[in-house]
Length: 226
Image (cartoon, rainbow, N blue to C red; front, side, top):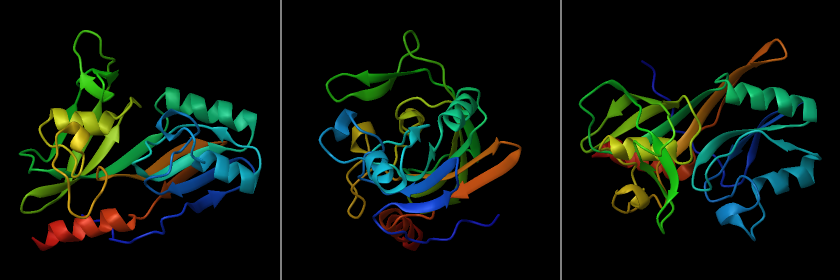
């Protein structure tokens, strides 16, 4: 298996693809994807892009602390089609995550029902009674002395789904103090990157990949060196 190259991107957004219907961007961590929420008062990625590229429609979201591929629509019709693809599972999302510990399995599917915004810390928690059904398939890409690089394929789009499922399995993301990991010396956020997005649209196949940002690449190299 060929592992992804450790390649850093800039801390500002970079355009991966643009045409009359789609705008695909590599979002840096620390920048809110859309207005409101915990990014209230800050200029979001969506607002920045609208100022530069004209009217856009929000198709999906990434957490402020998550880097990687994000897709916007450039017409109302494209927005309707792309939103339906997300709702019906037609978007193939792949995340890469560095986790604490070494999973005993090579591949595993987590199916814990999740309830978002729990408690004063606004965590997503496993809740068999009130949680919503969701599924994330994890696969080990590389093992290190104390950490592992995982591929995560969420079949649904719950808030903090990958982070909460990884923690529920006993392998929280590096730097994810909200879900039980210790603070990391060189990574000031959860080690989660939206690596790729693929889908069929208007009779064409699309696939986009975002290189690792500098902080994720640096943490990966340190894990490999130990």
